Image (cartoon, rainbow, N blue to C red; front, side, top):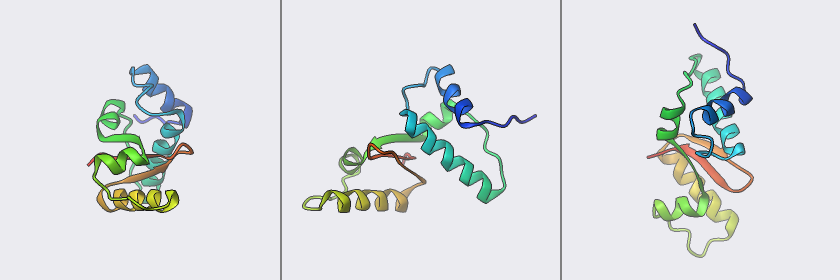
Length: 109
């Protein structure tokens, strides 16, 4: 039996599993939307497994991603630097999106 999960249910599931701080409020929405789009495009429903999502995905500030993955953004304007980091992530893994605080949500690689 499957259950339809809405955004509020998705957020609550993270809190109920003690993982409420793993992603920001907006980061959870970005992750949820990513899986909604993935489900729609593949025709397959994703099972909600909070622990697996926490192990497989992360939310990090774009400058931290650049540092952690040694992406050279030296000398670039802020917008160009953000775009370069996003492009790098898109080329290497599943990129879900960015929050208003410039945090990227993506599958760890």
